[in-house]
Image 1 (cartoon, rainbow, N blue to C red):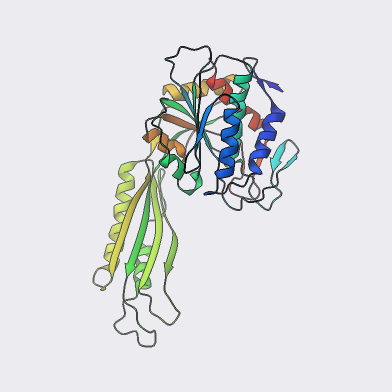
Image 2 (cartoon, rainbow, N blue to C red; image 1 turned 90 degrees about the vertical axis):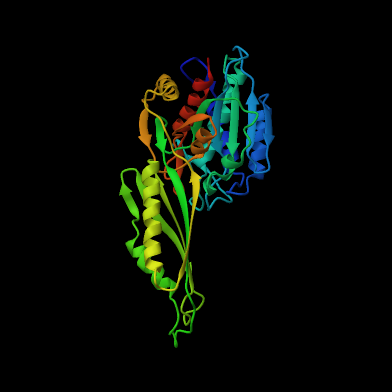
Length: 370
């Protein structure tokens, strides 16, 4: 047991066991049905009205204790899915930390956040302490582009602010800003011919290569990046390629810069295609929108105060990655992201210090207390 600032008890042994139970349920992105039922049943055991939707998102409501009925709920979120390799995780507890056996990821991103929420809430409920009403969303397919959060129906939720537990490093960081993200799908359509008689062919690969060589990619400024990560094309070594497809992105914490750089990339491809006889298909899809808060924002100050109460100095940062917080903010629930303690995520060397997992649970309990 560990006692936090108000004398409440985080059960470290139970917390660790919860995390071990979670990571041993296979939950790669798109296959979260079993873990969703596990989480929902655990929440129901705490008196929550917990439901699982068709995407295997888990939603739950827990009434407040010792507060006015009109008190607004506090929102909590983490996600259940893991990146590959994520099947058959075998966690090893040693030296005050948890790791996998090295053949898979550990899954602490973001099952550490899920475990912290479950333990923090259970500690409040079983100790009969005064706490806010809680609205909880444990999402699926976060790693596939925030799919679960985008598809989650929040019509029955009334919370206006909350916390996303989904970031690496020691507990204490608050993510103040995250980018807007454009997805790019580009096709260059030429004309095929046999390589032994290429006259009249329109080589889509050559055109795409000229465009890529001129396109602004990489870190464009302190808050903007662009990248092409997938190139597909050609049908055989002796056929002039008539179609090349490119998949890329532009992301920025400044929407005007995002649109300007997206337009520039489009113009580079248009110039490369012009006069060649090829055609261009250039599709832009908005993946999610940015959010940004100052250190003096009431929610930020609230989270910072809770961190101080559990003995951590708040650290503030901006990120170039998206999370479910981008979706919640767009849907009207003001949220920031906090770190949960895991290290070397998305690798088979991922690990989680147990002391950080305990602090994450303490943060949940402290934020929800009154």
